[in-house]
Image (cartoon, rainbow, N blue to C red):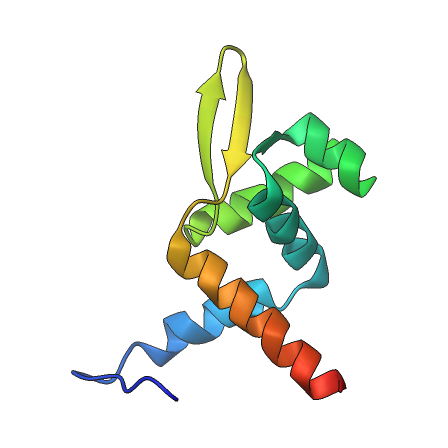
Amino acid sequence: MATRISGELPNIIKISRLFKVLGNPKRLQLIYLLIQKSMSVSEISSALKWEQSGVSHQLQLLRKYNLVQQHRHGKVVIYHLDDPKVMTLIADALSHAEDIVK
């Protein structure tokens, strides 16, 4: 059953920008990877076979929208996704996409 949204009309522009960020297949791959486990730029680059500069660029954009977080482990920056709302959003989108394909 659909969830009703109460209160004022949300900022449609911000929502649109968020979905634009999430609409990029590369960023979705990266988010999906970080749902599985926390990783450094080097580990992500190796797992996805992308240049480290490309990984860093995508992570910067995802951080701008609070979709991924980072913490330092010594000299290495580790990226992770631990926001239940983001995880639910991605899981629901994947489920919906699977239903469409059926």
